[in-house]
Length: 422
Ligand code: HEM
Image 1 (tube, helix red, strand yellow):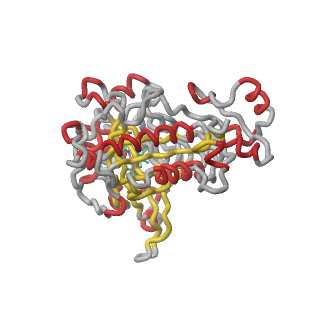
Image 2 (tube, rainbow, N blue to C red):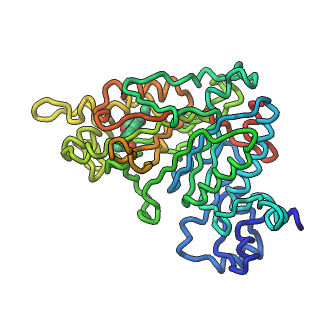
Image 3 (spheres, helix red, strand yellow):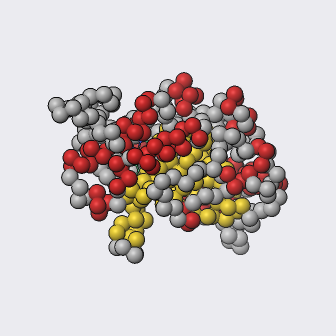
């Protein structure tokens, strides 16, 4: 009894408050509350919480958080290893696996005994007690530095995972770059997401330390129940041209590393690139609507390509106006990023706002650009080289942070994060 894991609801029960919700979702997602317990809890479900109830499974063929529809919030954490032995790293990944599997299902870390002993710090930090899982996903990857001489893994580094080159216009600041391990936590509740990062960092004490973190947001699904394409801080719909995550063949082609791609330990995983891109919002806000639309090659209101009507109409890159000029300018972001339809990646970006730049008094705000792909060289690097050189959007943005991570395939039950690499 004392070793029974605590669901976050049990904490409320112990406190005499009563349950609020029910976990729903596929696979292991519904496993915590079953049978009569579930029926009893269902009666207590509040309608207001309906949109946030589902839990995503932690175990599976692929990690959750990659083709999973974007949740409302992001808490990104980059860690550096302080450990010197591979065994210590393996032990950390095992601990993180247990913790992530619990947290994604809304359970407390530790058990009843380790959370109620008055003489010890509780195993779980407690700020998510009583909260539903809020669709949290925790996605793990390792950076290029993971394959340096420390752990003897250099020979395992995939060819599809090279260092990112310095792109034209980069103004990278070390405090937003790199990391041995990257963890993307997304959830419909920021406190739930923060709780995960904090507890992973706590479990890592003595093995790894946080290097940098960044929170991100977008409009919540409560604010837009139709779940249309979210707008970025420049006011434009962002994500329209993404490949369809429900198209399994396309996901195989664009996102999931295939067995024939080389590094067999990465099969069913994906490579992530993170760029912290600051927007010069004060300058953008002074540019005309026409200039803004020419920058993206799309209408701000509808998100449709210039010259078209609906958001999802194809880009007509050959259309000319009466003066013979391309309707979608040659340096428009959408045109260039479209790569003539030949190169795609899956974007999963969030807006960020981190207070003021005290030197200039301007907002430190922009886009936490995150993308997933099968081959960083052929996809992100190829695309960013063109954008860095030609994109009209460069007048308004600066890349200030950069990192890349090889995100492992999903963990099988009984396994642990990265077990195929070790
Ligand atoms: C602050 C920086 C950025 C902003 C504000 C931004 C915004 C946008 C917007 C508004 C669109 C049009 C709607 C859509 O299709 O989603 C778009 C399209 C796209 N962007 Fe970006 N983007 C940024 C950076 C990047 C970067 C760094 C890359 C990749 C290297 C990228 C790749 C793409 C792709 C692939 C498309 C779709 C093109 C197509 O229609 O095929 N974007 N972006």
